[in-house]
Length: 117
Length: 112
Image (cartoon, rainbow over all chains, first blue to last red; front, side, top):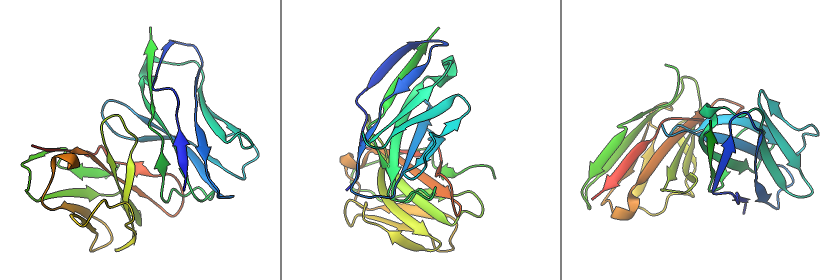
């Protein structure tokens, strides 16, 4: 069974600062994928970034980067130069395959990020 | 159409009633997923379709829940004899051959 743990239920960050959202995972699979999604108050889940278990480089997408530490089973999301529009719930998730697909996603409980002006 | 469309956006029903929730995936996406998100929680997997068939329905909580996708496009999640504990946001997602899930805005179900 797979499990995702997000230990920060809420975070307050000053605008323009960098933010790190923590995510640890537990799995016995050798091949898996890690995802981050953003959920604003509108409710839609917005895909941010993906990391495969065999990817040697940390994934980056614009202001988002994923700090993947395989030995520690952590996949923290880093948001650089935070903006007011970054305020939302953020979910870490994993799937049992590392090919970029998303079968059987297991989600964490999320972190509520609030960016303050 | 651009994204995944779910209707209705809100549904209020009385305990014991039957409800249907509809999902219209992104055109051409063969894989379709239903998730349920309770307040303060992350989404929980319910069922996954590949084409017309349910490839994995291990997340359905009990036999009151059923989903269909008869033509491999639109899907309907059906809940019989609704209970107050069924109140949640029901999220639908789709994806193509590779890549991440694309989610709809969800249907907020309230059972009174």
